[in-house]
Figure 1 (cartoon, rainbow, N blue to C red):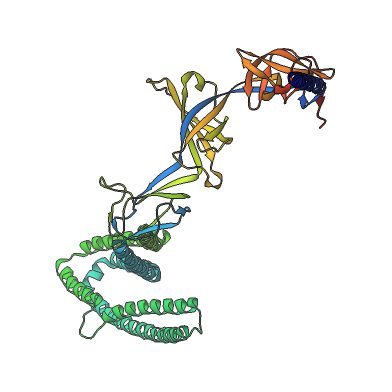
Figure 2 (cartoon, helix red, strand yellow):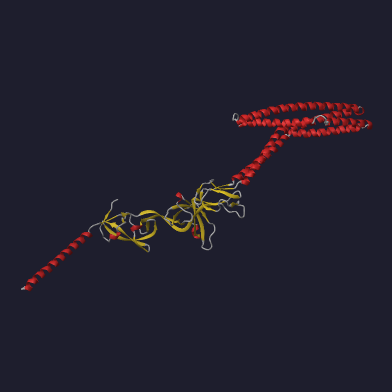
Length: 524
């Protein structure tokens, strides 16, 4: 009885358990069927036609576009240094200063030479013409006298010889009178020059005093000073002229007349009128030659030549002063370019040599970094594919990409060791984000194919050996399709298999798809 009672409950429990499992299995089967019939939501695209550009990459480095070693222009100790390594400088900025002592002394000497040349020019302009014209007047007077003497000698001949003593005495007295007149004229000229000098000196001193009080302009002072100096020159000339007539001094004309008197006496004694005539003719010829020379000097305005020589001396002295001032300015060391101080070679107190010296050492090195130079090597065969002016794309190891450079140099020679050619490209350094010495990758266009069939790279699965798989939408289900592929450009891949126009290609959720999976297309 007990066993029977126990058996019945065990059978009932077992049956209940089997029924429960059967229910669970049915539910799971129903859910699986429901899941298979639920569409997968996907995004799609269609193949586009575009241009496929092929490139090659090369490695290289960035270098400064310009690197200038700055030497001293004047040898001397560095007395100040106003630039530091890393500092940005502009063209013309003062970087350092060398000792200008020797250059300063040269400027002082040049200024002194210029002042002397200008003074000489002033004197020449004031007196040269008057001196030349005075020579002409004297020559004319001498010729007239010689001609009169010759006429007289020829007409009177022997009678004149015999009366030579009387005539010589007359000439002697006339010479004395002439000297007295010249003496009077010289004294009057001296007095006039002294009056003019005193007047101009007074004007100059008064103008100078007013100028110091800023009551007259610089030009007024210069005009007064110029008049004063001219009157000084005239006065000095008048003094020299007057000195010729001091008491106790014998004038040459008187001595000459006296000598002629003695000669006349001898001529009378020797009956030498023939020699007198010959001598008179010779005097005329000499006087005529002197007059011709004086006339040529006047006609040629020879004083202008003297003035021009004096002006040339002023110009030369001016150029020497300009050169000395430039050398003084050269003691200031300036930056020749816009850039950054890369290296400091000398310090304050060091002796800087000019660049022509065999032991010259630069003061600083400045590099231009606003534009950099990309240097890289390419195989000799690839060098024929590029030209100066071609654009290239650069990227750095630090992640800066799509930097556009311009090819500026392709070496005409090939490195025999590796059969490569050196190429330069200029690169704008916007915001100074690029640093010289940075390793770079340079991409150069090697080919171009137009009207290429392109799909997004992630739309093609299992790419191997030039083929891959895509899912296309047919009706409302996904169908796998094998396609041939070519190169990859950016985020796209070339599909060489011809796709029917308007073929809808699935671009995501491919891992959830099988042949025949229902799909629902996301509407953009």
